[in-house]
Image 1: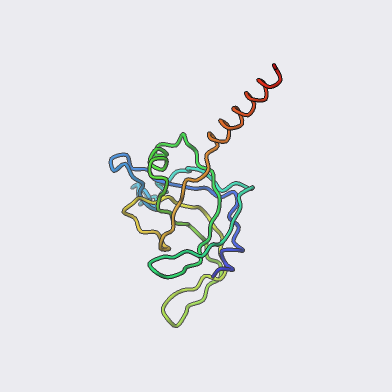
Image 2: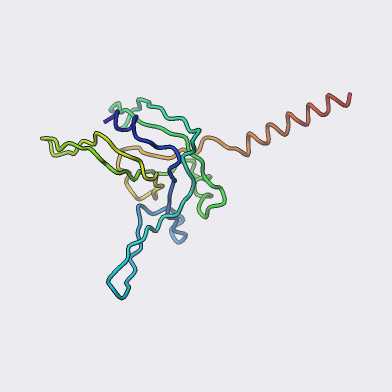
Amino acid sequence: TEDAFANAPIKNIPVVANFISDKNDFGGHDVKIVQNKDGIDIYAATVPFGLVPESAKQWFTDEMVDGETKRCFWTECLLWKRQYGFEKIAESKRVNHSMEIEASEYTFRDDGYTQIDKMRFEALCLLGSDVEPCFENSRLELGYSLDAEISQMMEQYKQYCLQKEV
């Protein structure tokens, strides 16, 4: 429900991804299965790629998806440019996305769907171009660049210094 999204804590959670260099693309909610003497261990194959900071804003928008208006939830996040695979995001400006949640309250509906009434975000997960997100059109869009802001501030500082010399 929209209330479940609006009330779910999302700040300070990781953005995770599994970048597969052979494909030059991301995977999905990938895991590694390792056999040990007692059986098997299952590990997340995704690694931290960024985070939703404490200062992040969240909001809802209405978007046309396949000819139908859908309510969409947005949040700001920070990505680490040094992570292997960031170039893929910088190049495409848009990557499929999903989320990892813990549903603590839910309702089984008559139409066969499970309605999540209360949840907690555990991670946001970047997905490959061939991996379908859980919600249509769910995506990460690269739209803010700290480098651009720093460059602009440096240019303003240079102009300020030049004016002081005159």
